[in-house]
Image: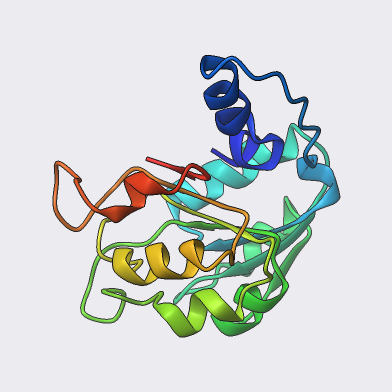
Length: 166
């Protein structure tokens, strides 16, 4: 998802299917600030895969930080609010709990850079889908990739947003 969002391959694909050629160059992982929220077993695997594409600035957050990971990676442990404001792309790796349900709502989304991107492959319900739709419809955020939903199968308004991979 990071590669697709950063390079806009999903948009290029859609345009090609509509008969339009528009080369989109996008950005490289090594050139952006990546924020990971949740650095457990899966978050660690994501970090290892990111390393294959260069050395982006890595902002990370976990309820139980494991500073031993700093031996393998150059990690910058930050508060979630700081990650929202500074990261170019944010990837979530969290369980759905009382404290993570609707953790990312309108205020958090709007605190992100206008051209930031967010990925949720962990659990539906962590990002408020209605708020994500409204914020993206207003032109905020360059992209999102969601493969988990509060209600599955998903049939919500995010299907109207081309720059949201579902």
